[in-house]
Length: 361
Image 1 (cartoon, helix red, strand yellow):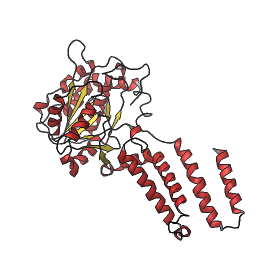
Image 2 (image 1 turned 60 degrees about the vertical axis):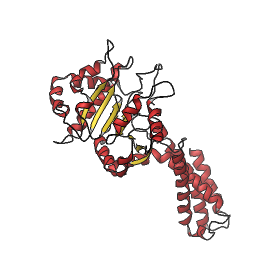
Image 3 (image 1 turned 90 degrees about the vertical axis):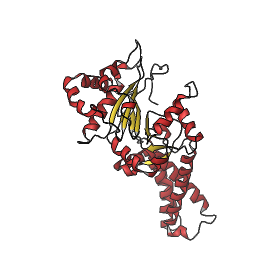
Image 4 (image 1 turned 180 degrees about the horizontal axis):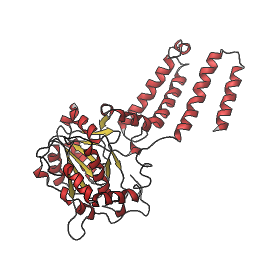
């Protein structure tokens, strides 16, 4: 890094010795040196929230043990009974946590971590509860889900509640502190009246501009062109050329600089959106993935009926079926919110074989 900066500074000094105006040298030198140097520094500072914070592929086992002792405690059971008990009829929002028994990674107690987090968030809602919470245990028979048994008092049937809106969480989808605040804001927006579902999570690696999603690539190129145009218009000396042939190389190179900066700053800019629920962005949904889904209105019933007629096989998973449904039925739409409202803490799958060293998706 030092050698790059040293050679760049020497290049600027050599250009200063020529008879051209000093201002021209400074501007051209800054355009040639500062962006690459800044991008090299940012390359090692890209922040992907939720991975390092959980300290490992599926979080620390200590977190799972803490959640296990939290729910084992008699005092805890009494404290949270007022938050999860006496489920109201026709609530504004119902959160259903779908859980399955895992043969590996039991010490992480994903379900207990998620329910503990929901308990904390619901406790900050005040007298009026943010939502009702149910657990859907898909296991039956001798291989029961021990974590679900610990929370069996909170298991109810959907038909007993009949909510106005519904959120479905997988048992390794840990909600963030502003989860209910943002969900409430999303339901108040106009698009929620015309969508089948809203994805509340998308893998961080796919939230960058450099991925195969067409609308992201178009946004990326447009951002580079707008940034380059604004930069060139800000320099009076370059205005005189009026984007002639002399300006075209500068426009294209500046666009590439802005595109590279946007790619490296993308994760940082997404985190800024957490300052307010109104800043969360909504975009068209893609196939992957479905650990956290919001179903406004009665769309959950329509989706359930559609899924009843589909079979889960290799190449036809739930996320693919939902994506196809949104594009085949009349008026079907699907959306995704950014940044994520949950942290995916699970690396051990309940439906497929796990590698020796699993990684988060």
